[in-house]
Length: 203
Ligand SMILES: CC(C)(COP(=O)(O)OP(=O)(O)OC[C@H]1O[C@@H](n2cnc3c(N)ncnc32)[C@H](O)[C@@H]1OP(=O)(O)O)[C@@H](O)C(=O)NCCC(=O)NCCS
Image (tube, rainbow, N blue to C red; front, side, top):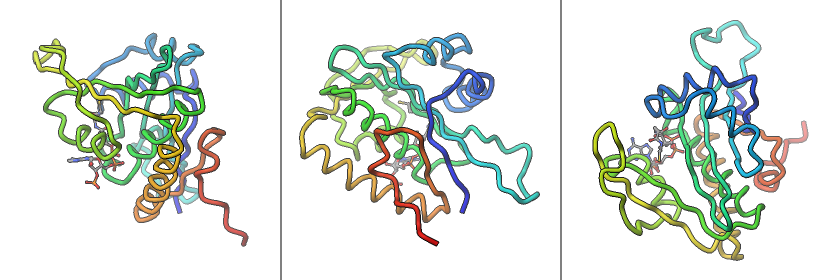
């Protein structure tokens, strides 16, 4: 089964993440922008990396860095600033895995709320966030300079409650099932999501 690894992004991956940024967001952050996030103690910048298969049938034009996600801790709030999955790998559960990881890290940091801005027209992202209890609390008029579109402001509350912890657990189980259906096995070095990863099989 192919592995997808979820790790903090390092400087070694800056060029690849800028290419992915171009595909997912049309060029939101520069290499310097990503570099700043790598070194900021208040930022969780994550990447999803597909491991190359040991066989020779791997397509060399297929990127290995296939997802990026970022969150800033500001006071007791988690500001989700990026979530993007390579178009070739969307709708397989990877976006949800990245979002769950950001929320798990926010909980580990002791943050109470999560918030983000999303384009009014971005139905895919809005549908994803709605599934994760993000509520629409307002809008910033003509926020996006390229289209003049409004941004919706979404919030998800009570990150520190037991109820939220239980929901995280359930959602992680659902996401692993979805990933498995698409033949992915998720691995990670992050302690915050270790309890949610499937136990390695004894064989
Ligand atoms: C939004 C995004 C991160 C979702 O990633 P993903 O890996 O495809 O999402 P997952 O497979 O984990 O989750 C699927 C859920 O997301 C939503 N979704 C994803 N793509 C969708 C689409 N094309 N249409 C409608 N809903 C969609 C649905 O709620 C879906 O659940 P369902 O399949 O049970 O209906 C991805 O579409 C993306 O990178 N988009 C471009 C960048 C972007 O807009 N980021 C968000 C900025 S705020």
